[in-house]
Image (cartoon, rainbow, N blue to C red; front, side, top):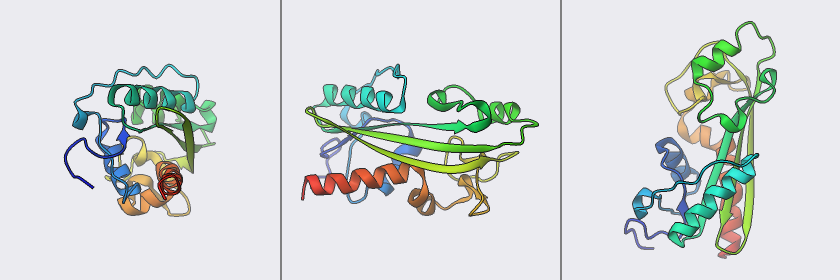
Length: 191
């Protein structure tokens, strides 16, 4: 397969460096290019009322602008005591400190990371989901990962996600689970 920038058979619609790094690991040996590598500026507004709709909006826009089969994801952090917030608004709703302030004096700290990937090839849509259960810690711990990883505590590991090595995180994360389902589907599609 050619290694020329932008020439891979898949487009991943994100410019988030953390997501790109994770997907490079998760989706190996599949290769993809990003909007930047294709000189595309995505302006897809996440106006959907679900992760599925937002992922679809981004996948459609990526395919429309590139003509390349596209994968897009929408993901979020849902906190039980906050009625599922920040949820769909995770990327723009709360900072880590904002969440910790909202969670002051709250005993129920159960939370879940959700990732929904949409694959669109110009004809049909396929969705792949991943979930990771945890609890919100009382303060940030760890330097790895990105986003809310430093406050997402995994009791079975006795660590936050931000304390896990990337390869371990990618095996158990919501994004890793969704990405592995997509990888299996894509392998069968092209097998």
